[in-house]
Length: 117
Length: 113
Image (tube, rainbow over all chains, first blue to last red; front, side):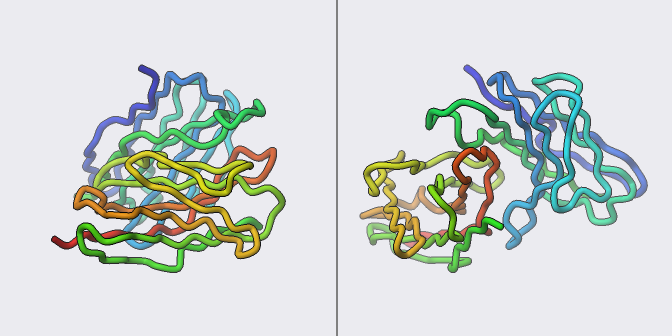
């Protein structure tokens, strides 16, 4: 079955350490997104990519970096510059073309919970 | 800019009672509207979506939503809530020709026995 996989489910980061969250999809979706979720703040967009080798900053990109070397993969690195990284991170994917209803909407992964220790 | 407002941060209902979660969107021609549900520690799952046509949309898990252009609303309803419906619900929109979604801040639903 097609889907989107995030790993690991839980991740612990020490102060000053960079960590990378994995997101892989086999839905043949062009676009991929990273969101950060904190209690009471909804979904905040970190980065998104609509095509391989291209990505754009979202609303809260500072302290994060991404790459999009393959259509299927969109890893997120939480750098030491992100001072408050403890949060739940969600990856999503979607299409960017086509006119039918099926082309709209996102598919989400099951998330990674990152905790600073 | 497009926006989505969910006025209720937290709602508590009794099991078996009816439910209505509110969603208002900013004005825009032909909005595409979505409701997602998130169980604790999980990703978001699509409940239903509206693009055009019949303004009453049926979704999974017994949910429905009604699009009202005059009120810029897309409220989610369920006639009888089950304990397993306790979750957080997100309304989202995109515009015609745009595939990127704008999300509301979510409404947390608690269900009491």
